[in-house]
Structures are given as C-alpha cells and as structure tokens.
Length: 219
Image (cartoon, rainbow, N blue to C red; front, side, top):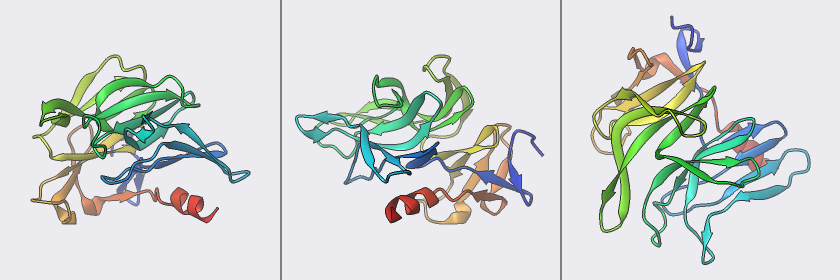
C-alpha cells in the first residue's frame, strides 16, 4: 500500500472538498449551480450568525459563484465560476483570498482545487471563444504553490475525462469518467493515484462532506 494514501478496511478514503469547510469555530460555505450563484459566507457556530466574506458584484449583480472551497491557516482557496452569469465571459478560475475576503488573486484557470500541504492541485482549463470567452478542459491535472508559482503538470488524460480531484491522506486521487453522456453509471468511473494505480469505485469510500451542510441548515 502507498503510505501517502489513507485507507479504511483496505479501501481508499477520499476527502471530497466541496461547498462547506470547517475552520476552528466557523464554517465557510458557498453554493453554485448553473442557475444560481452566491458569495462566500462564514457561519459562526457559537452564535449562529452569518457574514458575507466575498461577493463579486458589478452594477448590483453577482458576477459568479464559487465551489470547491478550501481554507488554510491564512487563505481561502476556491474556484470562481462565472458560467451562470450572462453579463460576463464564462470562466472558471482558481482564486486565493485572505480569510476576511480581501485581496482576491487569480492563480490559474481551472477548477476542483485541492490544498495538500503547501500545494494546490487542480484540473487545468484553457481559453476558447464561443461568442464570449469561455474555458474548457485542457485534459490535465496541475500543481502549484499557494502563491500560484511553480505550476507543473502531474497527470494527463484525454480532454473532458477527468471529473474531480479528492484529497487522500497526504496526496490526491482523481476520478476519470469513461461512460457516455451525463455521468450516471457508477461503474464507469475509475480512480487513480499519482502513481497511476487504478482503483474501481468498489475500492474507494468518500468522507461525508454533507454533515456540515446539514448542521448549517439546522442552526
């Protein structure tokens, strides 16, 4: 077994970084779908209050939402997605913010950022023109430092096959979809570690990232 990976009962344990993350006594949360976007919020578990951390408004209209939010000691790392907004070019980029929402810095074009130690792993995107500037999969996973420097490609697959990155122990595992149409058939997914070892869906288990969302709704 790979000592950098986390196992339980012989299966890989995947930490699915999503739209909520707990940081000490706070929950940072976002929501993003094709038809609805929202700012980055912080929820105080002690007093039940919520505050807006960062909201990209232009002329009173939100110009994007966020997903795959990570929180480190000093920063928020998230994907800023403008695909739900008709008023701006459609792009998905990795941004870094101070934890109070100040000083937004674009680090790379991509999505599904995962922070592991001093590095951010992400699925790289490239610009394309479809009447407006858009981003599309570049077919590779990259790694960069928290300041956006030192970008390197760590894994490649044909375009559009890589679907998500997961934290697993001290490294990452990524999923690849081999089916047709909308991803819905579970056995069409394969998972790979950084050594390109292949795992079926029956050999992985995902931590329940919905617990924080349930707590948030019940408060």
